[in-house]
Length: 530
Ligand SMILES: Cc1cc2nc3c(=O)[nH]c(=O)nc-3n(C[C@H](O)[C@H](O)[C@H](O)COP(=O)(O)OP(=O)(O)OC[C@H]3O[C@@H](n4cnc5c(N)ncnc54)[C@H](O)[C@@H]3O)c2cc1C
Image 1 (cartoon, protein in one colour):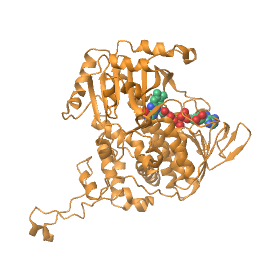
Image 2 (cartoon, helix red, strand yellow; image 1 turned 120 degrees about the vertical axis):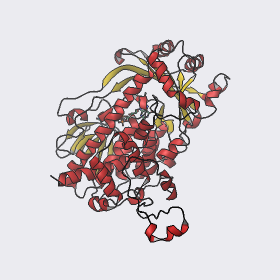
Image 3 (cartoon, rainbow, N blue to C red; image 1 turned 135 degrees about the horizontal axis):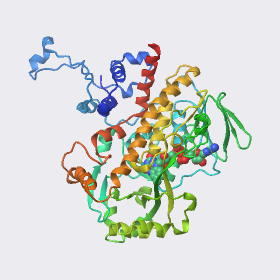
Image 4 (cartoon, rainbow, N blue to C red; image 1 turned 180 degrees about the horizontal axis):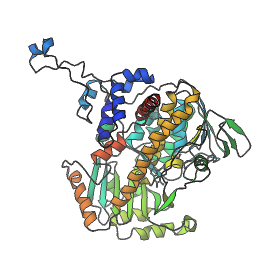
């Protein structure tokens, strides 16, 4: 049997073969694993069975003869050549997952109502858990303007019922164009529409952060989540587990998830008292928006707004990522540049002239837009070290999101990884039969997510290397590798990680919930065999 997601996974498995996982995939595909793991959500698994298919040599009378029926075994090689079978099964729009209700209903406390904490709350609540989120801020909100929601995250969010809340606010860019720093000439191109929807079964969105955050908040409330503001968590009891707020209030739970961001206090606890803080990468970014009406009025700039798209200018030690947000009303910009100085010394009043100086001499049209910026915030670009664990001793308190895997924003995947964390955690907890299995479920979660989050941290840093070459041989070779995608020629690899087929399927084709099911089944099997 084949499922669309299985085909996807095998495609991405080109560079990540695991014989045990393969065996389990085969078992799962043959339904046997459903008995092993009690996986009841078959909607993603089933598709036409090759084993059940009669294959003739093309002559009708032969096809009717049992003697000529050929049974084709389930392929185990990585392939995406079978996608037509999904279509045959009408699985093209895989957006309506049925939540698998958890067998054990847990009481879960989440620390932090950022994009990560709220996503996790939704993922857990839709499986039937009781969820309370504690946020230290007195008012909910998000700093910064735009954010990209790549398909690997959008697929989960859609299946969690976010579309009605996000739909009115998102923009779906047509494609992403890499541009040469000095004149804006296209040097790389990734077609997003319709390719990403077709291949990865979900759109690639961009949105205003505030809209994204509000959508998550509203969906969380709809699912019965309690969100408490002005609730700073000051103490954890990792054995109970329980937490204590600054006002003295205590909360007992079956599980505590700390999604408390880059400066996470819980991380130190998880690491046994010695924190592994996030590090400066020597880069900073100015974040700003420009009113599109101003740009539309300028014939030199209006072409940028003709259709929704992402445009990124890249040059030595700098790049500028742009796209429209707020349903096309606002032009979002992230201007990255080298800056290893201490953020405490940054002066908001000099930010605008400093930013203009950083990009003087760049494409005159880009400079024109930069000159339209009236307000900006400078942000340090940080990356977290690889952590050996995400779970506190006692195995009932864990960290996730930026607290666990802060990354530079060059793959636009930081929040997407937090969404995946939430999906994976909710999935593994829905597969346990008893609360005593929570530690084992967390261990399985940690193994899978440390691998994925760590790889995305590395992929993000790699973009910093690829994009920031000075003009010279490396830059020319990079641009050469991306030329086919600009000219519409076929290619099998690219220095553009949005386009490179292997990276693309790994980044956007990954299904965090399904991979977690497989990892849990594999870990259960290996425990049994000891
Ligand atoms: C310039 C830039 C561009 C980016 N672009 C993208 C993008 O396009 N796509 C993408 O996916 N990601 C992007 N990211 C990354 C993304 O913004 C983060 O990964 C994401 O917001 C992290 O969410 P979080 O919930 O883990 O952490 P946070 O957003 O930091 O939330 C943590 C929350 O915990 C609360 N908190 C902390 N301590 C306590 C406590 N003791 N008690 C109670 N509450 C507490 C905080 O107040 C906060 O609300 C970008 C990042 C940057 C800097």
